[in-house]
Amino acid sequence: MSDGPQLLGKTCMITGASNGIGKAAAHELAKEGAELLLVCRDAQRAQATVEEIKQRSGNPKVEYLLADLSSQADTRRMANEFLASGKPLHILLNNAGAVVQFRSETVDGIETTFALNHLAYFLLTNLLLDRLRESSPARIVNVSSDAHKRAFHGINFDDIEGKKSYGTLKAYGQSKLANILFTKELASRLEGSGVTVNCLHPGFVASRFGHNNGRFMQGVMSFIQVFGRTNEKGSESSVYLCASPEVEHMNGEYIYDCKVTQPTEHALDREAAKRLWQLSAEMTGLADSQPGS
Ligand SMILES: NC(=O)c1ccc[n+]([C@@H]2O[C@H](COP(=O)([O-])OP(=O)(O)OC[C@H]3O[C@@H](n4cnc5c(N)ncnc54)[C@H](OP(=O)(O)O)[C@@H]3O)[C@@H](O)[C@H]2O)c1
Image 1 (tube, rainbow, N blue to C red):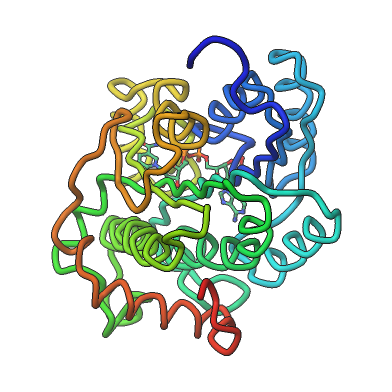
Image 2: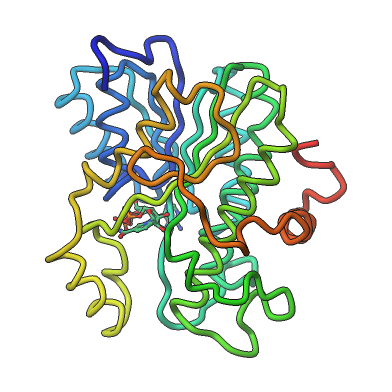
């Protein structure tokens, strides 16, 4: 990034920061001087990551918050803990995600890919939105993927949880399309609020993504391990959207390699974005509280 720390005095929450792209982004944002809150699901990995980032960046203001983001109750508990701390929130980087080879359901009885990759972004963001508004200027950054192109027919509202027909890449692609539709709808709701939201494709990255899946995904990932970019390279667009003064006012865009790019036409479908918002609000129990309005 540019000369001198860009984020002194800014508080930044990053989900999925104990590995991969999120951890690499956390390193960079720590170097920029931000106070970091790393949302992780495992205390040992979280503690080790905090120590490593403090040591390598020289920034002592790094802490972790524990949450399994596939659980709505756990996400709410963690968000409430943060809100009770009274800290401001200037940057929220929704990054935690997974690809799930065989259909499974979370503790809430929701298909795991959709729950973790989309509903967790939606729920956490909405729970923290008032604090982001109070702390404005503030930014929300959603890590999506070019895999959204695998949702050939858009969001399948008739079978959004893959109950009738589940495919690993179909479910993953749909969840990453949902990230873009969520970004677009939230951006229009946030217009003029001092809070912006954008999303990105990090490129194909040799992270640990998909490592705990069956043979098919391990095969895909071993290919990416050889030909994929590093976590550091993969985190560049996340860091850019979180920290660069160049994009301070940018809102509702999808970027790749720090440049605005066009997602598929399904990702630009305003009606689908509104319908997904409504459904997500119902599935997270936020429908009655008018989230993000
Ligand atoms: N790798 C790629 O080629 C690629 C391409 C496009 C988009 N992306 C996107 O990039 C983002 C980061 O992926 P990555 O490649 O860095 O993968 P990764 O190395 O597997 O890291 C994923 C992170 O998410 C966390 N996580 C997973 N399930 C969680 C849960 N239930 N609760 C809380 N945290 C959870 C993981 O925690 P643990 O450390 O505990 O496992 C880890 O920190 C994802 O949104 C992914 O869709 C990746």
